[in-house]
Image 1: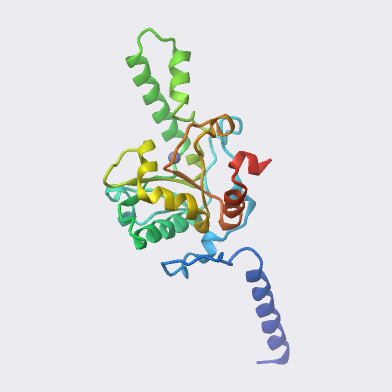
Image 2: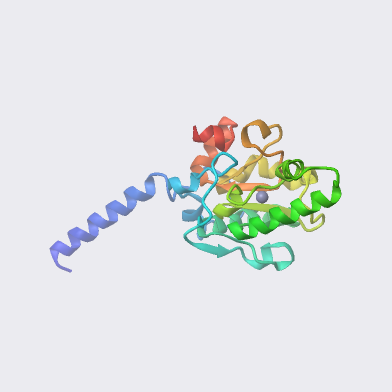
Length: 241
Ligand SMILES: [Zn+2]
């Protein structure tokens, strides 16, 4: 090798070492059961894009979609169905579920991830139809208000970012507050941040998040932000201020 190319190679090595020592690539002090080799760079992303805030006050556009999308391995999803997420969030969710399984919470799988605007529109309209059928005396506005207490309008769902995943137990495959009674839930509230996830809609957080308690819904923001959010005990809305 020429002297010059040796110097360039050394400089490149030094730069790589510098980059990996700050933020991305550095795992927190945590005793991982699984081998994090394939997940390390995904769970430790620090790009601002992972902090995007989507809620009723901050809708994302009809065309918003994650740049790279991949599927969570089907053996880690409910009935093997397709659950897609933004690529790094998908790897992080895979690591989180594998860790849960390694710690004995083998009933936990992913059930819902990325949903595009059109799909959310279909969901919203279906729920609205159900409420109108259930309450013939109500106006459309009243029915909409009811739907909005448990579902998002198209463009206002965090699922359109591809950065959140709904977890479920195969022993009780419905998304309701009983998930908080599952032994895995307590582990998740204390440890999900080591995989870059936060409990997005905590109990009693409705005034800030606009959503009632969702113990099953986890949002990926990367380990650094997730740890800060966990330690400060705040919501993403408060953290984003
Ligand atoms: Zn969800």
